[in-house]
Image (cartoon, rainbow over all chains, first blue to last red; front, side):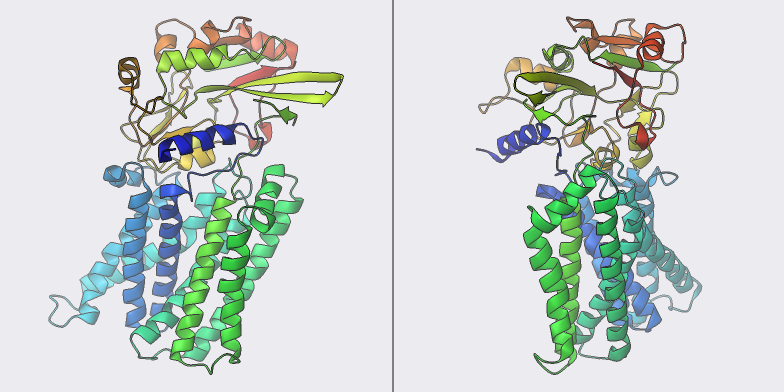
Length: 309
Length: 201
């Protein structure tokens, strides 16, 4: 069976179901969207903490991750050659806002970063162009941290995503990803110029916030009265996404970093902190992946009978 | 003017005539259905009955797909309320598919033919106007409607279960049927103001 015919058969099977899973975001080429959202979120967080801790490698990492995120988004689009058209609906579409945010972030990074890392650059970081770049990147960063959750909340066809907590949760992911990026960057540059204790403390606090928000979202989906949202939770906790959730999100993203942090496995070092960051980021990726893949469309039938065709 | 459709569930016999007529009219590729019929059964033997629910784009008054579209490819015609897609603008992000509470949008990401050996000449001719890697959906057969004809699914329904008309005109048949027979929409709680109404079975 070819890939196309397999996809067709899958669609026909899905259309027969009362609870039809969404497959466009997350399956096949759709995985690039998850990668794009993940990278862009981490990039914005890395930039934020890079600014807070005045850590230039963190800013560079943020810029590179954002570039990778942009490429991943392009790889997802059906018609990537038309990407520039996404600027048109900023007034209503969160994807447009995200596109503008990413563009500002990347252009701002191009203006602000080179004078910081290269010698003999035509303008300085504290020149008018440098300040302009800083401002554009900072504005873009805020948009990138904020917009992603709203893209999902605006998806009225997927009740599980259509939650007011989703944007806050995605903001928390961006912060957690940003800290993770800085922890990894510190090891790569072998220059722990950032106060690691502060970073780890923030990581623990943000991880706590993510756990609480996620638990609230699950609780809301289970008690909100929407059967599609409940089905999504079931898919995530006990269905086709359970392996990714327990293995990826909980084990890799939470248990392993906490075990490493406890110091029982090995004494804390720059390398161990980098491993904590890496596992934490991987866990966030799986969290986003499972949430997206667990999306179930609102069922169409007003009354649920036994489906026969 | 706001075009709308009333589907009489008491008259629908689940023959798939609408689905086939739509396919014949538009030559939509595999995996793209502008009109579908959902069939299910309820009850326990011996009191079992079939339920048919024909579905299509609801051409909402406040369409979330239009709001979510980043390029303006999804839009609503001001003069008749039909929600349409400009395929030349569509970037294939599929956010409209996630925004639609009625799941009646399809992504055409495949070579549009039914047979493994390739498209037949007929298929090739019919599929030619459909670009790939964009989202597709029902537009109430706008070309037919503008030519004074009803949509293909309406014209080909053998039991006259589908009625098409102006929802803004209180004297139109659709308005009368909705009022007299208690027409309802799917998922009114979403607040999109669908233009497709159903009459109870």
